[in-house]
Length: 299
Image (cartoon, rainbow, N blue to C red; front, side, top):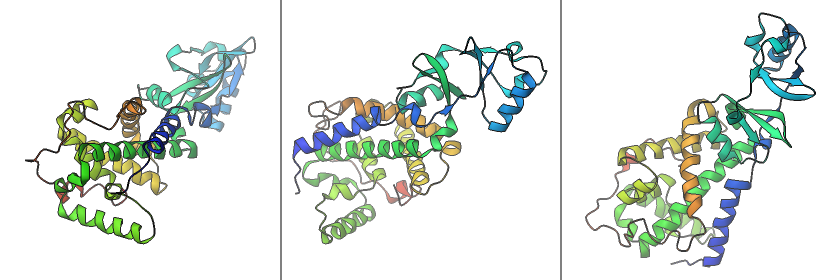
């Protein structure tokens, strides 16, 4: 069995934790907020907003943004002051906010949020901004965190590759072929490293305690989550849009990975499940190939 220095593994986990919580901030994806004086002509402001395709514009009083307008608000004319909306504090995100926090705010049914920089609202963020390269890089990192956690947990729960008895022959054949190829190329990897993410997740969610830990109400729900995670990963890998089809998955993944991140760095983070099942259940049947049919090769 190939061994790894526990300190190296812990350092990698901590780097992943920093990537998730500190690697990117809202300013990496936000756009400058177009703003108008309160006395500005509403019709002119509407033309400016429609030209920029921004969903909102700031309204300034005494040189500071204190409210906002939407283009549709301005159709009846007058001044911007006639149509100004109050900014809900729940829509205001500090400029150092992490992307998980941004996802949480936008995931609560808000179409847009404002970004405060040194006490002044200067930018805004919307869901489509998560198509930008920094957000896509962060999401790839998020999926990497999931895989690292799954790999280390499986290795601890099922020592000496005892998990192989729980994986179908077809999936094991693919894992062994990949392992042999990587070893041929001089890449010293463990067999568990060659499992697809979906296979690893299947091994973990066999345990009811782990499903409860990550708030899956049933095995069916957890399997659906695996499939949606695969869709997100494939769309990221192939430069496909992610917000229209995968936004719900992004919100759920950020929330659940936050729970994983909270465990990284703890003593024996992957040493046991919540109920401490240190040995595999002898009566468990191997996962069927059909379970993975829709996961995609990239998962």
